[in-house]
Image (tube, one colour):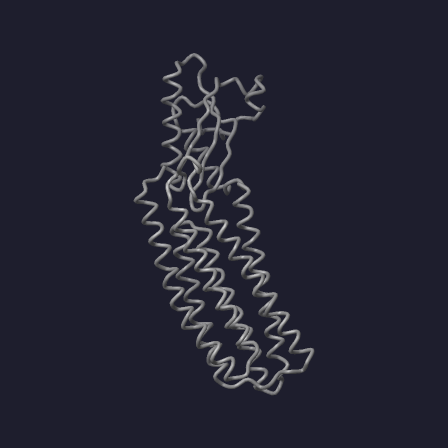
Length: 314
């Protein structure tokens, strides 16, 4: 398992950017709400509500980072990393709910004809939001990739959705000030649709991680090559991976010479584990089952899996 110091460093890196996001969001929400009310722009008020949902999302991410850094215990032998995809799913659902509320409100305004020409301050707020939110997305996404966190990446995408929605808000307000006042609530509907779409994408991605979707092909290939380079491994006939937040666990069955001793087989398994961790630093656990090299050909315990090593790997 990775050292607790590494987990603490990862938490501090993620928490630092999340706290910064929360402070920036508080200021942005206040200004956008003020501009929306004073400028009589339903699209800007909707945009402010979207930014307000970022505060809730960031709070959820912070809590998940704190939980995921906890070491494995008796009740959670694989650690607490799955707190992050759980948080990502919550963030996605928050986005979907915010989008639905914004969309319904905008439709109601169109149906009732209760829309007016927005003031110039709403236009300024939209431009400021686009710049600030895009900057927040880039900083947060870079951090998410650095610490390999699905929860922090969901937070980053939340900021990106806010930047996109502000673009729609800007277009709607600009059109409304040009005389097409109905464009303001129409922009609100466009913003709502975008938010719902992004929220559903986050829910889908986090659900796949919670359901132990296999690692990406590059990781699998790296694992196979690393194992094949270990002396004494004749084949790999089972390989499965599971993700735990920014980390992963690998299960595999290897074939070795049936004439070697149990101790020699154990030593090979230890080398395999270290080889995998060397090429995939995010792998925190490896379970190696050692079989005689022919077991997968005629023993049901081998599950009938073919040799996964590529020619030249062993």
